[in-house]
View 1 (cartoon, rainbow, N blue to C red):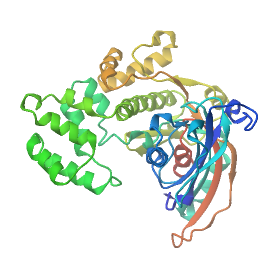
View 2 (view 1 turned 120 degrees about the vertical axis):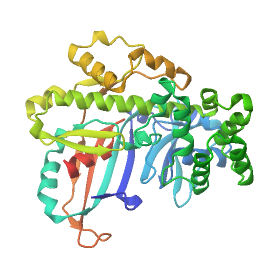
View 3 (view 1 turned 180 degrees about the horizontal axis):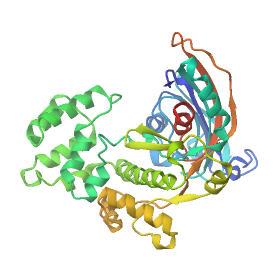
View 4 (view 1 turned 180 degrees about the vertical axis):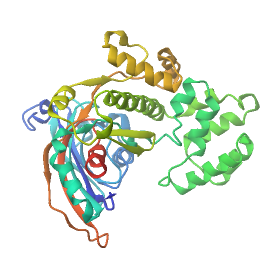
Length: 401
């Protein structure tokens, strides 16, 4: 199975809540212009930053509902205060088109869901029957795990937030400063390699930064801070120079991993061993089910599981949930009140997330010859998911379970 070989293989369109989408364009006296932003193979925040710089609009004034995949063609909604005028962009990989004027800016949470059109390639014809059966059972959904996209700050199963709450500030800083993804900018990858080879020689690293004209504020400020003799082992303070948005990502990544682990433990209580399938991902393993009977599906489809946050009294939940949370925290070697130590990075937000992700409006084509992979086949499927659910989890359920 091959996913995202070309941008056209992964198409995402946002679905707004009805109360926002239903506002009439020319009759309401609104103060925010609603736009459609279509991008191809561009990271979400880079696209928003481009709009910000192109029209001299502070980034904080651009409202949006959620982040979208980079390696895809995505269509999302954004708002910009109407006093900036009616704006437009028409470039090969980025388009901005005005829709109407509304009363309030978009914010995280205004999204109802996403519509996906995904082409999966590199399929062996020997797998047609299994994939076909999984497609026919797709209405039974999949566990609503957070997928790899959530864990871009995690390397070798090490979480910056976990190291931070355990007081391992040097380890937390190392995860940030010396690890890199293949997709990162070459100059930053070279810098991270240099930092790894010369860890603690901040004067030498600072000279490298100056000689190579590295402009990243985070790296420059952290290394400058550590270069002062009295600061050289004050790794906790050095982490204060990390952008607040990144800090929140570190915290949410660890919280999301813990939620995944809790749901995996919960499913073990319901899914017989011979119906379980384990799939590896960047932070461990997912537990999927081969089949799920109607009784169990109806029991789980509307159930939620809480995220872990320090200011919640979990004694109010049933014993099953309490035991699962205790088991996962014990395995991690932490206690609930330890999460208060993360407040300098970002407060853990509490929510209750559905255990299952159930696609709606499912459509799929027949298998066709794959023009990009000789001797293999492809198939295109369409479906809608509620906000916060990952299409890639559905794909894993269909093509690997």
